[in-house]
Image 1 (cartoon, helix red, strand yellow):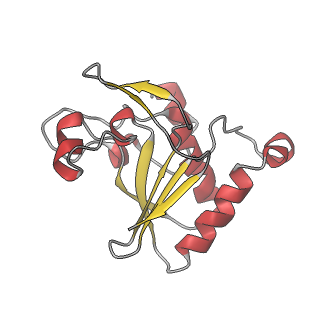
Image 2 (cartoon, rainbow, N blue to C red; image 1 turned 45 degrees about the horizontal axis):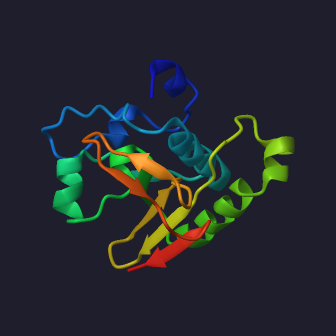
Length: 160
């Protein structure tokens, strides 16, 4: 993301999304604009803080926290989030329903979100939720040149 894009974000700062490895030099600007804009919109809808526990991950850190899995974090297209209150799940599901309703976009949203949420991981034992915007059958290329095609339903919800 660039400075102009960050100016369009109300509730988040780049440092909230930087890699936790402490070695790669991440600034949080590696995040995908549509992902952060989606989070910003969810924050506005639920009227309560969202805490980002993990945003961008360099490939080395991704391998450390999730060995053998190339996911959406190294693309800057995922975030693990927490909420202050216990009704986070219902609020998130409500937000996703609103975000995925294109009619709502046309009539009510000041900042149109071009990529709705496509992946949701619910981890109650760790008290966080993973969300991403990688589409079914989308081919992505990581910084090291590795290619991957995401194969999953249009809206994939999983839990652990």
